[in-house]
Image (cartoon, rainbow, N blue to C red; front, side, top):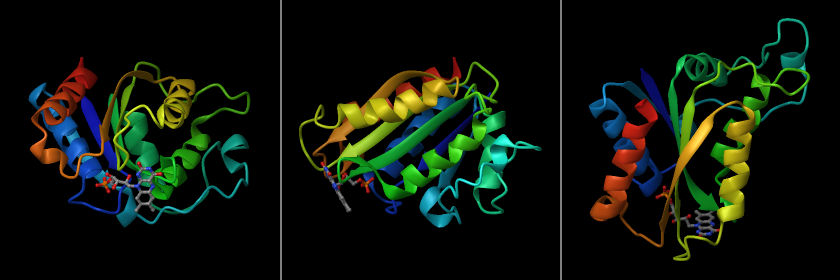
Length: 182
Ligand SMILES: Cc1cc2nc3c(=O)[nH]c(=O)nc-3n(C[C@H](O)[C@H](O)[C@H](O)COP(=O)(O)O)c2cc1C
């Protein structure tokens, strides 16, 4: 089993990064190999809408950091995406990454990915109302589902300055990671 995590915050010592690391610790305890990717450090450009991924060869032709991630996602059994809320949605780093997953759709918009992958979104926001951005999170999860992934869980840290001090949320992140392995 292989579970990989993506951090969409530029803050490696921030909440999203802590939650992804904690979910991966849970996955690791359940027997998975894990790797974390910090999207802000990777050279990932926005989708250029060239449609190469829909043509002959069916691959994205942008030679950037996403090429490694395409292979990683194809091979993974579980995926954790951690992001802060920026202006009511996931961060730009996360959005660019999500846009690039467009390469995983066939021309008829069916998914090229093998079925059976599980994914989870772990997010952090300043606003204390954890339901305020539900629609945004649902939109991200809908995208993952259309790619053939199951998305059983979500974690929202709302108005929590340092999530590592929040025992309940850290426990939940750990359990989410464990469940990605089953
Ligand atoms: C550019 C920017 C935009 C933000 N927009 C929102 C927002 O729309 N709603 C909100 O609740 N918090 C917003 N925040 C606060 C972050 O979501 C919050 O500080 C979050 O916990 C940061 O996560 P991190 O520790 O993983 O970086 C924003 C922060 C930044 C820097």
